Amino acid sequence: MTGGIVAAIVVGIIIFLLSIPLDLSFHLRVRERLEFRFSLTWFFSLVKKEFGRKRRAAKKRAQRSWAFTDFLRIRGLLPQILRLLKDVVKRIRIKELTIDFAIGLDDPADTALLVGSLWLPAFLLSPSSPYSIRLQPSFADGTVFRGYAHVILRLRPIHLVPAIARFGCSRVALRLLGLLISGRWKRKR
Image 1 (tube, helix red, strand yellow):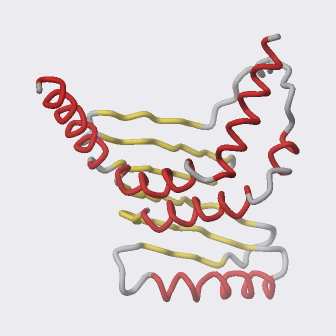
Image 2 (tube, rainbow, N blue to C red):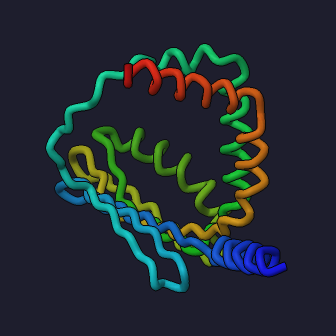
Image 3 (spheres, rainbow, N blue to C red):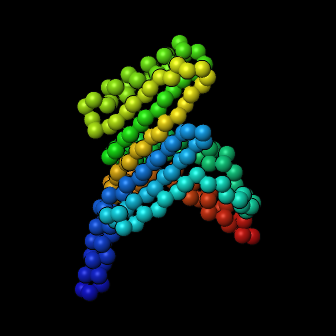
């Protein structure tokens, strides 16, 4: 009886934690150089982790007994991964979107074609939503690409459980797991 109550409490806590939204924030700025930041915010902003574009020393990688091409040989892997990505993308909501870029090419006609082709989808998306999208053509001499983009995406991890379970219980995932385990087994010998 006590074990059942403890198990129910643990399951309740896990469901509660998975129901708390996770915010993914992307920030891109282009001036003289490219700056990119990515951050995760969870548990009512108590848990934050920020990743930036920093150069790190190259790590030596361990020799692997399997190659990426071994994964590609698994029949049906690509459709399953695409289905998983499609299910995940369906669950992501755009909380905030701000785009402001000045774009210019050497030829003013090319600049007009590029900005015009980008402007129409931005215009159709922007007026009826809280998104702020601004594309400004630059007809000055030379190539110009500067500005910034800021996107905040929100998802609830519990909504991903069915998609991940569907992928994890498929034959393809079991073959992939077998390949990973056999590769690790061969490496330890």
